[in-house]
Image (cartoon, rainbow, N blue to C red):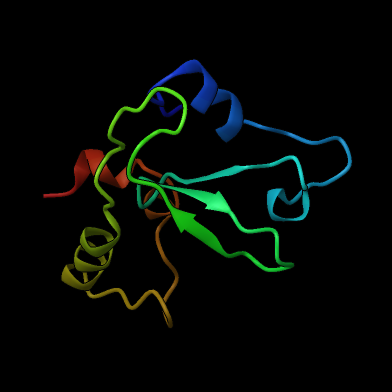
Amino acid sequence: MTEHCCEEMTRHVDWHCDTHADPFACPDALVDFSAKFREYGLIVHDGGTSRIGMLFCPWCGQRLPESQRDRWFDELEARGIDPWKDDVPAEFQDGSWLQTAS
């Protein structure tokens, strides 16, 4: 489980709706968190999966962790894995790869 900067951020990241399984379909869902990239984003409710990246928490003001998106792709490339063509290992689907990456 990922720890977030404050209780309010945790509440929004962990939001679950009884009506909508997909947070991008739920008008009450505000924040999306990608554990594999360690990225936070405000959900844009436009019918797709758009989001606006967040650098600071809107509730406590704390700077959020730096995105690991580029590092994720670099690690896969170093292992000879093309994420567009190959199966991506399970540890790269969540944040656990960050504990083992060089």
